[in-house]
Length: 194
Image 1 (cartoon, rainbow, N blue to C red):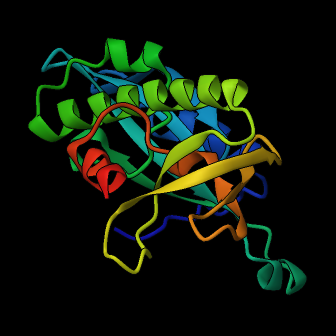
Image 2 (spheres, helix red, strand yellow; image 1 turned 180 degrees about the horizontal axis):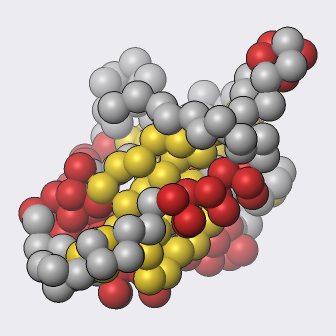
């Protein structure tokens, strides 16, 4: 599963237009809806003869800075069917609702997209409610005691992506909101009890 680079796509928008035109196969598989999120294009296909709908994820990539300096302007893509379990999870709900692919991996991927959306919403609510001194559970794979989840003491907001917090030794660090653990997990309960 390598990358494909169409000959005349010199921007992300040109590549998206090319994909929507050239991946559409009327009478066989037709694109009936799509959405682009950054460098990811989600396309909902309808298989005409088998009468089901499925999502294909197109990862989009432009030339590296070195390649641009050398004159390369080509954009390429890698396509991944939802049944292959793509590792991107921000597919819009309107596309997820329309897919009726029954493959186990496709169902699991759609649920992972929904779970990530719920967790992001919970983190946004948590970030707005945090006050200095609040204790947050944080996914920290590098802890010396081997626990995957540790405790961070919230100090202040930094950006929408990061906050400043103290570890249990009192050292200040910048932490990612995306690694804050929301909900109850047995792993989190065990590490907080220690």
